[in-house]
Image 1: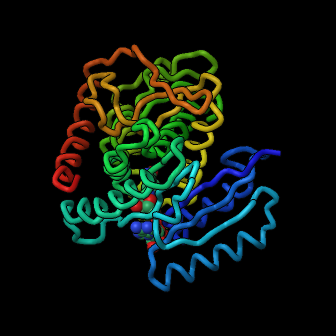
Image 2 (image 1 turned 60 degrees about the vertical axis):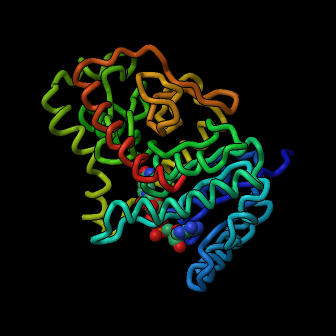
Length: 327
Ligand code: NAI
């Protein structure tokens, strides 16, 4: 049987943590033959640490055959020790009346510390997924704070946007979601993201031709996907958690186990493709194989798409600019 791998999860006592840990421990993320050791990080305060103990009691009570060990931590230097995977979920979301500069500064401090800790103690092959918002910029900060780790090991979660786009297209076309291929979400995990179905197919047929309605694309589809997070908060009184955890599982599983040629969206540091400046943490279409992702290259970018890509890129560059002084 396989040697256990170490999976660090931050924000482990939060809502996404609660929807995520049980699925990692059951083998949905890394495979039904891969034992895992969970290294769980929460802030040191008594409340979250106590809640984390409660979550761990429930994990025990599931008697998962693949759960080879679990640890509670309050310090990233121990939580990330030898981690093969790190899911950085905990962050400070924007509170009412919180200025953007304040949000970036608070999260800057968290992700600098965690990036440094990964740099110091994690496996040299650690695969990092940042879920905590602002996810792309937090991933960028962590990457910049970990100069001894390969930069491509740092990724941000765009998969929830990708999955939201898939289900909207399934609803519009009346086709099963599983038949949709070649969806893309470009850019930032924010309402500026550009969900692009120009290359998408259903059983080999062009989705764009099937829908053939640019007005729906610009005025219904993109706003629906872009504002879906706000719509969930409005309906549920809480932000998306189960769907976010599901997207995190999809992202890590595909990265670790491969996509068999299927396109998925990952937020990754740009190599300069599609005119995105190097290192910008940007949603790109990728395929995964052998534990590595590869950007789908050579796609034509039309005027409408370029305009949307420019908007989401400008937002990311301004976020980067807002944290420059911290790095
Ligand atoms: P939550 O507030 O329920 O849980 C967050 C947990 O993180 C709390 O238990 C908190 O104590 C912990 N935490 C805060 N700072 C930490 C630190 N420095 N180290 C370790 N733990 C820390 O929030 P929820 O709903 O679980 O969401 C977590 C994050 O995910 C939020 O930033 C949210 O905006 C983001 N999110 C991102 C999505 C994406 O698609 N990228 C989708 C949905 C949510």
